[in-house]
Length: 78
Image (cartoon, rainbow, N blue to C red; front, side):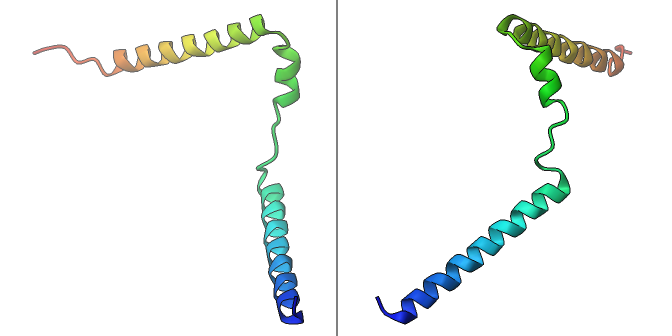
């Protein structure tokens, strides 16, 4: 390989590495990698049955919220 190609490859790889480092630092600064409840949820829902129960509870909460929203928007016929 010629030295010009090697210099070009080194320049491009250095640039791409710098872009990746800036993206990583931006992600750390903005909290993209923070998961506050990961370990708590891991301990709370440590088997499949409890995880299914948690999913079912979330579905019930969503259904209740939709029902309340429907009742709130109810308008009787004149």
